[in-house]
Length: 467
Image 1 (tube, rainbow, N blue to C red):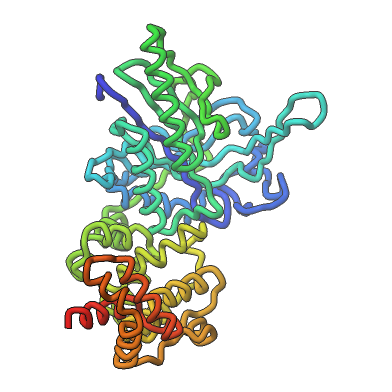
Image 2 (spheres, rainbow, N blue to C red):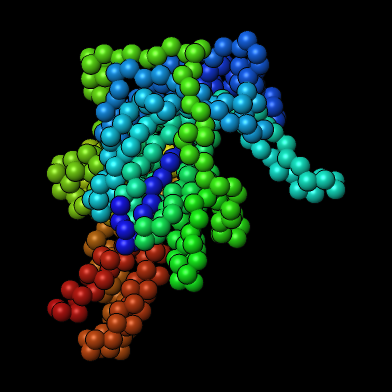
């Protein structure tokens, strides 16, 4: 515990990417409220839960990928509480013995964050607060979410700033994307943020959605607690909620203790038992994760650490790079993907994992660029069209007439003509006037109908001036 600073621990709830719920066959995706529920996820008397094997396998993968010790035997418990979002008055979760314990994750700066536990549980229903429907204040309940499989990842209180908390979530979601157990487009990731300052009482901010939300909620809460102490007021142990519109937290209730939930063994589910051989086999089946892939990229392709990390952080981008690097010089491929392609993805708000991209198409475009058959500008325009409209780069180049049919000698002739016709600009360039260089390059580009590569034009002008 950092008694003289900020202490943060996260409880991350991640919706697993399964078709059916954790203990019944209801679909996890439904459009109409209360259209995907049954006696089991509604908790009707006599209904019996049946464990989703795929969800269990996903949870085990998460535990192993987070360097946890997987328990050879674990079971489910009932967490008892009364609230409209849990119709059977208890939640099936894990408490005494979870799937995995004692793991760790490294932040981008190398700091190791301990993982206390990884466990499976069902999601409660969703409360829908419909403001403005009549004079009364009320909430609606959508039980479609009731029973959705969640894996909960609980950290040690090792985080010391809101920025570290966001970094941790970045690392966690990258690992989840490699495992393919979580889909950001259809699933949810929420965190309960536990935070204290200077060794005072711990406050929990519940159900904060997304990485940015967690960072902002913690920034406000740290500032709030410090302000209380500056004014000689007590920080009270409590549960708070985060308002995304105002970026503030507000008190909701006093903080419960684990004893308040009255955990008992879930009698309708048997204990799960795994052998050492089964755990070893699951570990061997894990994919190469981003940290290991980044190191391999540095060694195998001689990439710098930053570029290797950018490529490895996105599973799809890493695969694209490896395929393109088989056809194009790896450094060129890495530079184009991390700068040009990702610039379009980020600027356009695209999901790279949802795009249907061909490594062969991008490699063909890079080959044209390396052979000086297209300009860098044309290559950028082609990749924009590919990502935003789905038009293949080679087809775009052909349709737009952007392929350069000029030989280097043709460009040299154009440069010689422009230099001969603009002697004052040449004289100014020789005295160090950089604007003259831009002018001369522009004249050559105009003369060649923009089919010359500007950098090559600059190189030829420099050679001619020296000569």
